[in-house]
Image (cartoon, rainbow over all chains, first blue to last red; front, side, top):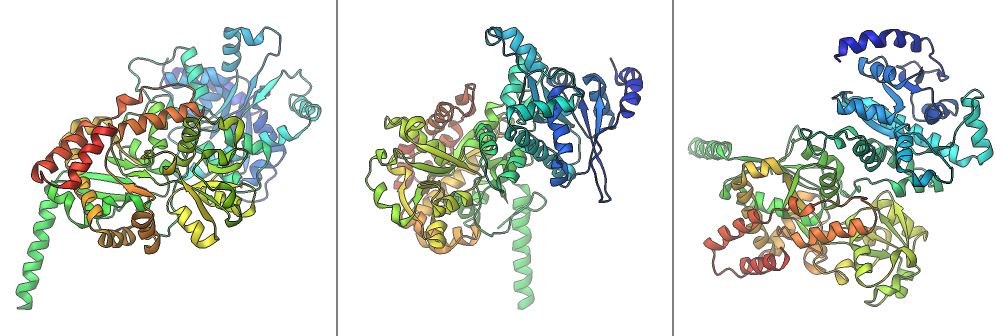
Length: 273
Length: 342
């Protein structure tokens, strides 16, 4: 299926979802809005909590939330550039990445969990649930200049996760219930970590690795550096147990260097000393 | 006369530019640590050009930025610790370790009033203690490896507090929120000098000759031009000899190039010898390091790391240097060291 065909199919639904624009942040400063699409799904709650609790604003972002009824139309909007980032189902997103769509996963979200007695024994069921979890994606061709916005977006989602985790279970359930406008909210496990190894497990479970793909194909589409930078930014502030746990689970390249004030050379001009 | 001299100097300069222009180029990234100074010795003493390679050095502020540049093929060589290349390789990036830059170097630092309780050579003194560290730093990985080798269950007996940077580790030690912390050069020297903290132990005391910063290259580039990479290592081998036999000039070169306090460079390099600049690839050390990362639970899947280590190019470089200097003791020691560790 070529892009033109996708575009024709997606266009009506795109128009529909654009009419569903919701959750606009209060914003007094003039500036560009960051358009964040999200799936109408309880696993997208971090995006909505970040908006309602002012976490985007805390990160200096003016975010416009755009609701989508299905992942396919959301990913089409992301590809078309009508949204800047999107929170959609991971299984479908990985499927699109395997087909060559230039998306990069920058953060995780909520994954439905079954607490039934046999749930942990049924691997197929677990895999299916994992694939229905939410991840946040950006187009891979986003200019480097906007890396700061993406880090800010991810930091806001981490803040939203912290907000939910700091609520009592009863209050948290009420928060999620309110976001779903009264619909039944399943058990959801939230984790803003994009977690390459979890993505790899889903990727392998779906059999998406093609022999012709380079070994780091998936790694090139999971932008953990953004999550690590966002976490680093938040760790400058006071440490709390939620952040400490996220930090403990993240696998980030250690910030090893430098203590000196020496001139840093850039790739535009190397040292020939 | 002045014109003649000027014309002569100009022609010499033009000749050197022409020679350099004809040499194969390597773009080399590094992070500014004292033990990375071999690059500057080789540069300043002209070893790279004598060996037939034109090296351009690029300093990076963090290992993650550097390794990203290497992955984007903006660099031909990178020296960004051991963890960063291992993480990237385990996720499918095709890098190959082919040399080394630093052995040892990590220290356990504490407040002066806590020094006595950490005295002695037995790692059991750390049982029950709270240790601050930067997760996945060389100190983190090697200290846990040393504890395991000593039969200490660190998951049960020691509390590790993961912090975001060396500065955060120093602050935590000063405030007393941890009993001690793991730091690397020049941070522990700076912590002693600026914050009045004390080194309780160097990790070398518990884990001799462990691997720190390794030299890596994109595998395809390395395989396509092995001779250039061999020349590059030959220059570093000669720089190692200079570093072993000319301390004062080496200190001057390291200090000037890395903008680090001369006293710290001299102390770390030649007085306390807390780390060693050594171009040996240290294959066994890399494999041990990977094993310790796996045992610490940082990476859930194993990976055939050995396929990403090339020791042949270093051996060929060492042989080429020895052939020209068959009786040199430093080069003979390097050969013995290579045989033991690869």
